[in-house]
Length: 262
Ligand code: HPA
Image 1 (cartoon, protein in one colour):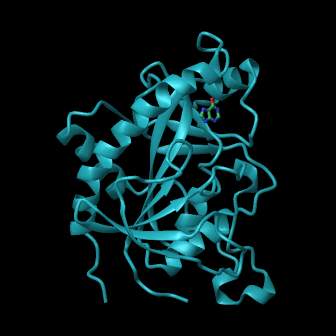
Image 2 (cartoon, helix red, strand yellow):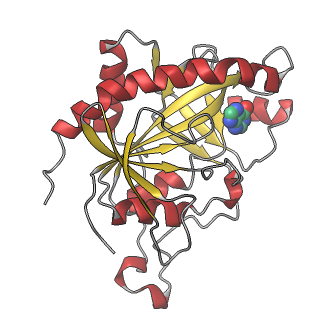
């Protein structure tokens, strides 16, 4: 199936398993050659813009980061017409500039995950042209166009935002040790999450314009007061409220740049 329901898509993570402001028009159970997506793809209206929404961890937040079928999720969105994807991800902060409760728009990634299905392009003979071996360019893993629109939207709505930084992506589902966070810092990571990869690489392989709103919900292990879950409980709502304001300004701007629906 390939039908263009909408060209803009939002993937919601921890703190955004639902998107209450999206006026739902329909929910589509998409089949993919890779498996079942985390949830039905929701089509709806948000501030006058038609958008797709997918709950990365499933509707009831039951799918652990390493068990998410990232290939099925990206393929399902592409099948529904997505060309531009805003990925919302909760992260822990390493850089002092990104205080918990605030939002960043990372510019780069270091991938520490393992054992995930991380490519459509491994050259598997039964996957035909769509699976033919490609070494995609990934120098800048995020779309600069989408990053800029997210940053402009935040500035226009007076929401503090951190431009740039490196997202380290760990395997989870456990949080890191203090020594692991010290290593991430030495490597140059500014924030750490569990779901940024292979999602970003698969989006690139599918030719989607993809960027991330990284919502800091805690100081990474060893950098805060030592009660990470308490911090997460305190910060997730404030961070997600900021995300909603940013999306309300960014989606109309991104929509204006989209190819018209056929
Ligand atoms: N580490 C990894 N992933 C996360 C964190 C963290 O501290 N906080 C939210 N997602």
